[in-house]
Length: 396
Image (tube, rainbow, N blue to C red; front, top):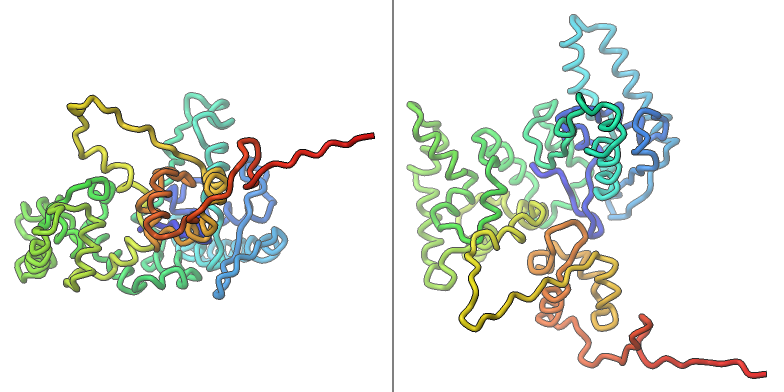
């Protein structure tokens, strides 16, 4: 399950997801609460990290450190003391605390991903003070961030993490996605997501397995076992995968015959095929950040053409610079970036790294969608303002 959500065009991390990003190493719920209350001296790099509340009407409101200190920190401390008073052993008490502590963090509250990652790198990265002071014992891999955690402290931890963010699931079917998460977790079907999302060409058969919630690689492993799991038999031998493959193969006459996983999903949705509808949310909202956008090149053989033409370098800019560059000709650029996950701009022009955009590809998208002004005002090379530059001089 990818725990990153999109809010106002930016990547955000629910605070309840933070402990799972490192499999509960260092950033447990009590530590998260201490950091966001401003009361922790043990993680100085996180000073100033701010939490925000997403309201049901879409408003984003900054949380105060005072509220975290007065309520969340103390609630967690009280829960810990109550469990310690009744525990039969330390390990039993600790596991009970893990299962209960996550829910003590507030629902619908998040931190911005870029701000969190900057603080995390400064605190736990290879050039951090921890690494310098403990060169022989510090292991950065212990604190590496995993935005697709497979395990959590409670049975319904996925639902707990997304509580308060239900409004972001409207493009898809939230319950269908949660069902899909459960199905794929049981059979390790998410293990190779980066591989499949990175391919520019996926066969209709592999696409059928994937869109039914199964992974072709894992299915092959399971089939080699003495007792093939019931669901693999049911999904394949009872015909769902085969029927979906046949429907997808009907589209092969329309080039390209082999599409990416994302493209096969779009085809299946368009023709009304029987696939797991949880993938609507998977592709429409989560997007598994950019892996399928940047890795398509790895599946293509790049050779010199007969005319000895060279590939044009990509014109990549950070979001703010990109907006400044095109705003004079593309007035709705900020709103379009905010809807990039739904309007197709992200798929076509996101450069693969956070807040970076391919300007040329974005312009192509804007032109195709009639976003560009038909006539542009003259723009002086030394100012961001369109039109001529009038220079005034003072005379005595």
